Amino acid sequence: MMKSFGFGQAGGEVLLVHPDYLLSTLPADEFQHYSARREQRLIKMNTHTQGVIIGKHSHIQVKNEAPYSSTQESNVYLDPTARAEYDATSKTWRFGGGDSLTAEENRRLRGEKRPKKTKAAADAASSSNKKTSDAHQADSSSTLLTAINQAATDLGLASKNM
Image: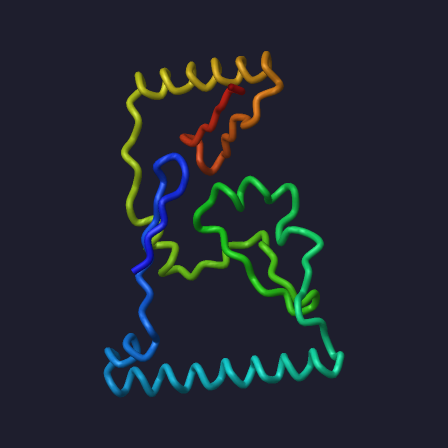
């Protein structure tokens, strides 16, 4: 057990378990399945390492750009269902325009509907958003601007410099 107390009364606790103890809790068939998957990962790792040694490819693939365009940025940040897809031509991960979730995942993630806002709550929220927007236009030195997305209309972030 490791404990760490950071500055500002923030702390953390970590429990380290040796893999032998963890894997010993698995039933025999699950352990065999895990061992087979681990063996496949080991083969891929060895193949990659050999390719690095002979100069076939670099050890680390440094990315020069984000996996999304500037127009997709807010959707990627604010949509919890956004998924990246592997692009074989550029050999990197990208966020496509389409929905990469299966029908079952969509049903599960969107299963719980948000309660409808009352008219009074909607009016209060719109006037609050307008005041926040006006305040940010007046104070352009704000470190965190209002972030409102069409897909997440009830999300609003605002901050003032201290």
